[in-house]
Image (cartoon, rainbow, N blue to C red; front, side, top):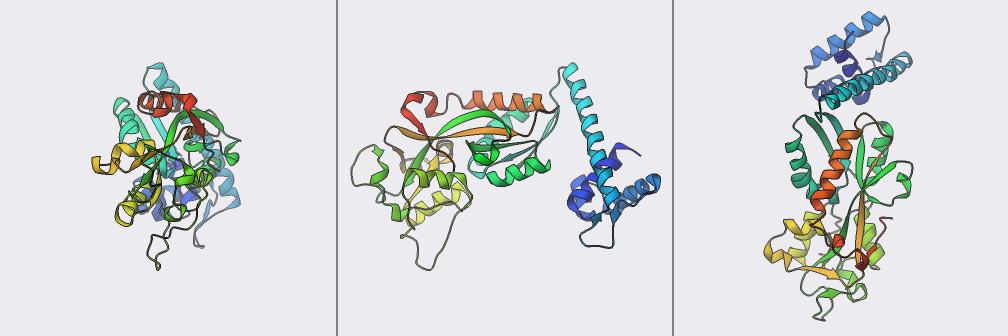
Length: 317
């Protein structure tokens, strides 16, 4: 028995399929199958029922998988402590990020962090808040980046990351005819709003700012809810109307598109972004360093940090 066999055991239990588990472990399916069979022979137990589709973990197998995870965690903790003693930040971190944040910190802050720490292996998944919470409970993720406060996340540890202003992205004819630099929610034509799909916290925050109705600028035979900010921007550019825009998204717009960005009148709405995790583990040092790096990098970029008293928080639910 060796560490690799335990990792393969855990993978097969997770994916319930030898081919998918092999792909996740970056080995061939015959190799993985042989290693699992060897482990079963050594332990003299049947861990997986191969007659079912998907593969079923036997009752004895489930108990062994639990123990295998404990062994892997203990080994990883030992490696982490050794790295700390050598003053090296290293290890693997599984991170879930809501879609309205990931696209704006992944190619910048997170990439820069990884350049500074080449021995860190970061696995990032774009997920809704509810799916991040489920993945944290199942152990699939080590941490998640979400908009807070969020009731279902109260059981987790929270580390504040940043506060980000919520703005409008609007075609010229979609806001009030007043020529003010700022927009009052009551002046918005709520029948021309493009929304993100249900379950997206940024959609709820927009609904909390304005009383929204169905978009009437879209073609009558089109029913569409976007899953990301870039799609909303393209819809406004092509069909007109309005959408909400987190401040960090402005950096990715062209100069022409930035002319369509409008701020609400003070107090300016903002959303709070935090990192949540189930409990501190041997990976905590990596997580702490990542949080500190992102927070410091964004400190001078975001409007909230200049005059916090001019802002009001908008809850994501």
